Image 1 (cartoon, rainbow, N blue to C red):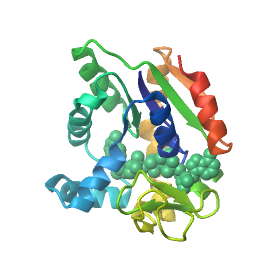
Image 2: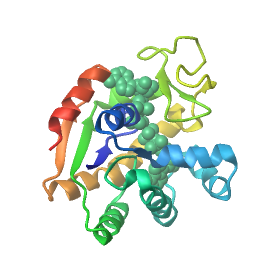
Image 3: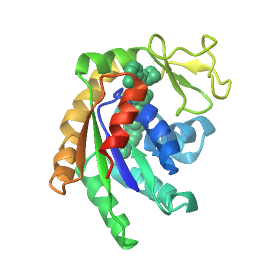
Length: 214
Ligand code: ADP
Ligand code: ADP
């Protein structure tokens, strides 16, 4: 199954994607995690995008689509995947449709995680991310690591992402409303969208998401 997760920054996409990917046995593909891995490894792509991520802007479509296409072409993604943070605007959504059509495929479902803005701000303010693997995320109140400052999964150091600071979060939310929200209507016209009320404990949101899948 080919699934797209949408929702504002801090809605819980990464958290749910990791759990759903395991349940559905498909890879979790997060463009944000891929960019951060490139940044921490110091690759040319990482050097190119670092300041854009830190400032909360969007990486140009050409770069993002090429990176996502590369990841989706890997053998583990042949039968399906869960996209988290991609596509993020109409241009990327159309590019994705084009890429999938080449292989005779299409998106099967879009899960829209709905969380009130005040809660999103709380979730981001308390988010702590693993330096070794940014898909490992915790929260100062809602999802405390067993040992303070240390990732439960891999022992990496937990830190606050530069773009999770308050000023940058506002900019990211504005970009979400202006650029990303329109893709929900784009997919709605194709009958693909399920809205998941996501102001609930993590396992409950996972249950709702699984129930909404075709
Ligand atoms: P969050 O999970 O908090 O919404 P992400 O990890 O998805 O954040 O994204 C972090 C940053 O990576 C974005 O602010 C943007 O700079 C960049 N990014 C991630 N995905 C995309 C994309 N599809 N298009 C452009 N930029 C992206
Ligand atoms: P996104 O990928 O959409 O930016 P994350 O999955 O990283 O969001 O979640 C943002 C923060 O909120 C993290 O610190 C995470 O631990 C926490 N979180 C995720 N889902 C929930 C939930 N259902 N209830 C409370 N906190 C949550």
